[in-house]
Image (cartoon, rainbow, N blue to C red):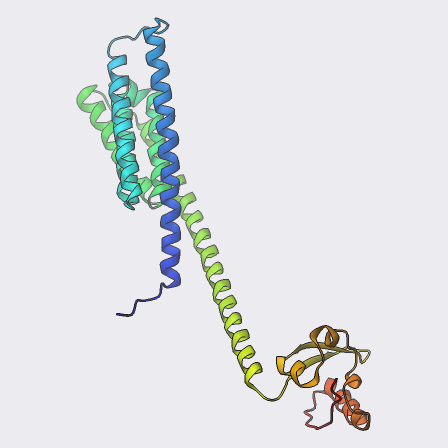
Length: 288
């Protein structure tokens, strides 16, 4: 069965998918390295007696670190087998869960810990679709509202929620603009590639015709002072006349290879070229 050749749109989709997979791979590696290093430092300072963990700080730290590490490894495995979208969704969910369990509930929704929710909002617009930052913000808003109402018995912080939505809108608009710019660049690259392929095919057809024909063809330009410039000539030209490309490129007149008795006819023909008049003539040439 004949296989369908990949279309330009298929190649563009593959390029975008490859870029996102590569970006997710880099983020997973760096964020996991930072998390492991931070946890190791915290545990080391606690064992050395330099940090006194209050209440459930240490268990929360270990639990959030464990969730983060396991989630990162699962996402890394999914990304390796080509399921980058599922890996991205899971990774964002892991980050949100890690933020929720890494600190006390009141700190998660009211203090600087809440600012960490900006990370999954921005990642959603980068790793997924631009509008997905809005969906993630909606999920975070629901989580913060539930913690505030049912755990803390208080009203959700409208200022924090409003800040998240503002960041989500900016992330969505920025990612949308970037996506349009990348799509335009991809279309321009595809057009250049098609033009280059078309030119290569035309040159190949011309070469084949030039090799098969028994006659030769050439093109030249006429400068305002009457000097001639050879633009191109077929391979048969060298085979029939004996003049090499290096020799022809240095010509400023066709009199070199035109028979002396026919040069007047040739000069008359060249003189009519700037006027745009069609001309058909025959003259003898001098071969090497």
